[in-house]
Length: 135
Image (cartoon, rainbow, N blue to C red):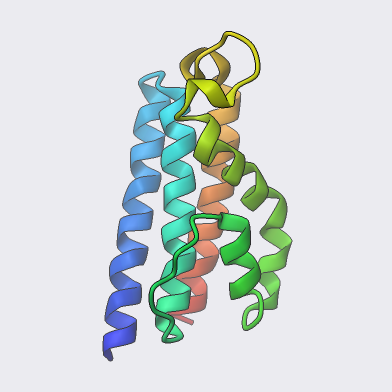
């Protein structure tokens, strides 16, 4: 395995682990963290694909932006753009109270349904990334 694929595999493994953490957080009722961890899983899985292609110093955290970049060589990823945009929203809103209009905190704003959706989106992206890397 060459160095690019080794780095890609490392990022994908951590992305998949973040997805497991999101599932655990959802089970424990920490829905805002489940949303954030799901976003992290998807972000790292997409970065894995870019590292496999020789990219370096990927500075964005936007799942949608990463997905658009990946779609240049894996066009099927554009089908996942709705989930990518939802995960981008969770990246900020699930962590910072001042990102939510009104007086709610992220722990009061996010619920099981939100967490489940974020986990599904991230799982789709992680699965697609694994297939693309190891097809």
